[in-house]
Amino acid sequence: MVAQLVLVRHGESTANRDNEFTGWTDAPLTLKGRQQAKSVGAILAQRQLLFDMVHTSYLQRAITTANIILLEMNQSWLPISKTWRLNERHYGALRGLNKDMARTKYGVEAVALWRRSYTEVPPLLEKSLSDRRYPNHIEPLGESLKMASQRMLPYWLEVVAPELRAGHNQLIVAHGSTLRALIKYLEKIGDNDIDGLEIGNGEPISYTFDDQFHMSERQYLESN
Image (cartoon, rainbow, N blue to C red; front, side):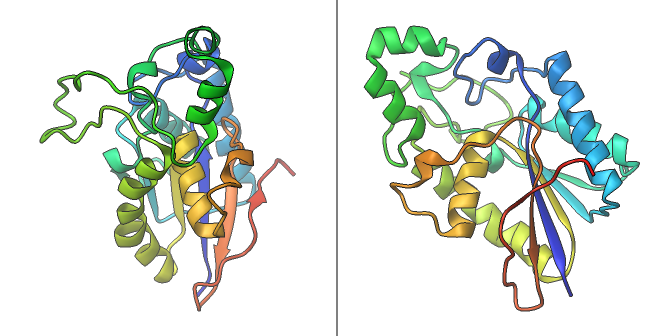
């Protein structure tokens, strides 16, 4: 039984628009971001894709994107699983800082490493913020992409992959870093090569899995 996985980075958020590091900050979508989500829904509807389950983070930019996509596809009734494990990578003390200002403060090379390296950790927060979404000190003080991958992968292995193996189509609406980490894992991309992978807002990516759970190549879905 063949199953399809579609990955979508949320539409443009206010932080994307303002060129800010966001991480776990709960930035809303812009009007452009909502339109991007609607366009994704139209593309998936045009391809007559039927999903069995949707997965997203605890952050409203991803949740809202998922809801708009499903509304556009007339599949709003689908179950949505929300998890902190799909949250964007935590940018620590960079959170809320304009990226150009960060380059001025820390240097161009340091910021480039924090953004694109697999193992470099940004400056840490002194303490995590109190938020009832994240009990038991789940929220980190900052993360490398590797650290974000390590807390994301258990969800893939324990929740999403078994559904695909059962032949159930899955939609994941998440964030640039967690989707980069997942694609790195799926495609076995090397630690030093992941810096070249960019995922745009509202650009659906598709993989197909066959009976043996062999995966197709990455496909970017566009309007016919």
